[in-house]
Length: 525
Ligand code: NOJ
Ligand code: NOJ
Image 1 (cartoon, helix red, strand yellow):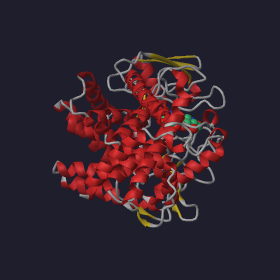
Image 2: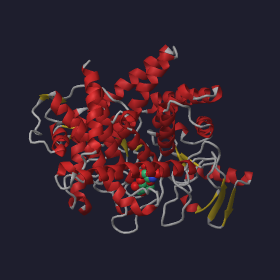
Image 3: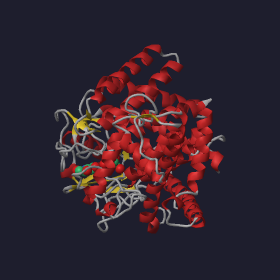
Image 4: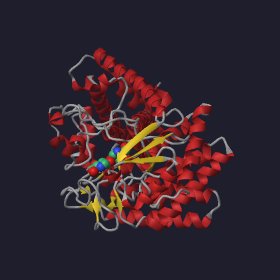
């Protein structure tokens, strides 16, 4: 009953939030506020179309062949034999100090970004992580729709399942901990940070909705086999050190554990529904162990969840920064972990007080680091980067992390709307205060304990406003880009890394899906 009341309240609050963006700041007239709001709405619809189209352009079929030419000094020593074998097959030409390969993407492959030349990085690979984030978005769109996805999209999802199986049974020296493959399904010959054990977990989370929704029994079977392989591999390997998602540090890290916990949690439910009792028990045991290991990342003294722990062992470090971590051990990837694991309750879900405390620390870190953010008012959304020590392409704020920060607020509003009540604690109080203060009500200072219904409604509204604040900053900075979303924001002049990143588009779609869900979707439209 209470939950029904809150649901209704959420709808009213959320839909109300649309027209209150600017009026609550007292700066603009109500009619202006409505314009500002509809402006945001129409930009969201427009950018969603752009993102969807660009995302599909990076998923085969539709990705043009690419010729890679690289100096052989970048070939990983333990992959030299693979390169020679490819040469013998005629798939690669070695000439002087370079090798050349023509890559014809196979159906199911998703490149992290379109082919590009320096100074943009070469992201023309099927990264297990990036492709899973992208395909998860497509699979979610499929699951959320009343009508089935058009034939073409269903085909792409089925191809992704089949391609995943093919990669899992390929001859990668790294096994299922492999980070990325060529888009034609062959091995990446280059030196890279391996293993990365978040990829298999993200792939499981992308494939799970597909088993249920796949319209073809073959696709469903391929997805099921791929899920089992990944989870069984992770069950045996998650305690190994892994490079983090930024491919910088070989430790145990919170993000990787978070997505693994999410994969085991959903995987256990899935196995149990299929009557695979032994697997269900195994997966749920691993989930519990991982969540317990994640508790060690909480620093009472610092007041946030740290990112990395443990000695650097077994990974072969390469490249700048490998093996070192920033002294404060504070990382936006902790929030991405809470988002990508898609756990809405229990320890380390995004509602956990420790995660909320970390969100405050992250916002403060990047407000102090970037002059751009320091110049913004409290009602303007901040740009978020990776960590304090980041120097990659200038160490700018990142597009998909900033969008993730918006999504974090939307998803939380959705979860709280469903939960119906919320307890303010010492650890989450500042996070709650910021959301309440955003609505500008005089009584916004939260006391400890369960929030009263009126303050609960204000909190939901504040979360949506804060999510929208971030989206408006993104809109401002991407206005000139004709729909492209880069990896990084161009604050320092010209250093955005990749100019059109698949993951950024998936993050835009996911954030705005979460926004619509928090506003209980169709009810507001
Ligand atoms: C490439 C990785 O993709 C990036 O995340 C990392 O920061 C640099 N390598 C550092 O070497
Ligand atoms: C660099 C990022 O750090 C990494 O997470 C990502 O997988 C690659 N770029 C490709 O987008």
